[in-house]
Image (tube, rainbow, N blue to C red; front, side, top):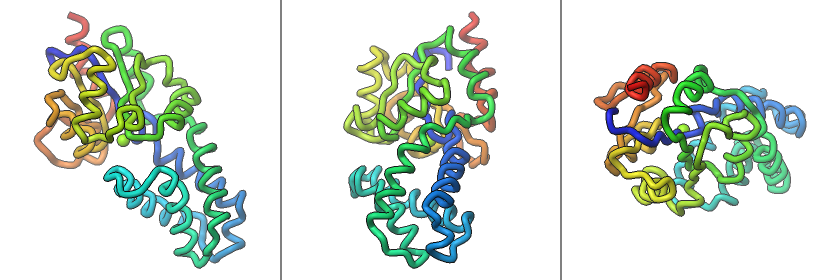
Length: 234
Ligand SMILES: [Mg+2]
């Protein structure tokens, strides 16, 4: 990690606790739209089904096989359909409410703020995310993370999604950084970590589920500080 000058963080599932924040939002929408009265689904079943389908449609979005607008509706349309509700206006209404409400949630992964406080005076920090630009800005502001980052770079700005090398190239240009002085920290092995390494960056896999592989990996965010802060103190 010797040459690292710029640190790029993924946001969802890495700093911002996507799982908890999304589940809380889905639970509230389930109640608000009275989904339990429209079908026999239990709240947890509805949420689990949505999470499964959302992952599936996100993969299609990442490969540019569906649009952002389609993703936002189809994930709810398909979830409701699986519980016997064929209702496009309702799907659109829930989809809209979800993108308004979810980014206002504020739960962060353990150690996120502590790590950022340790790094902020030693390195320029940036966000590099495949999430929707306007949504990521709300998440950062709501959770108080916005103050830590010089640049917030999203796939929508770069016109390419991680692991496409063009987004890493775009990020370097934006931050006036070179590949060999850039470090990516993210939860997704293929998208964040291998994507960055393939472009010549260094990378640390935030890997709480301890997936085995040969690259640099930590179980908790605070473990990153031991890899980086000492050198920054030199
Ligand atoms: Mg992520």
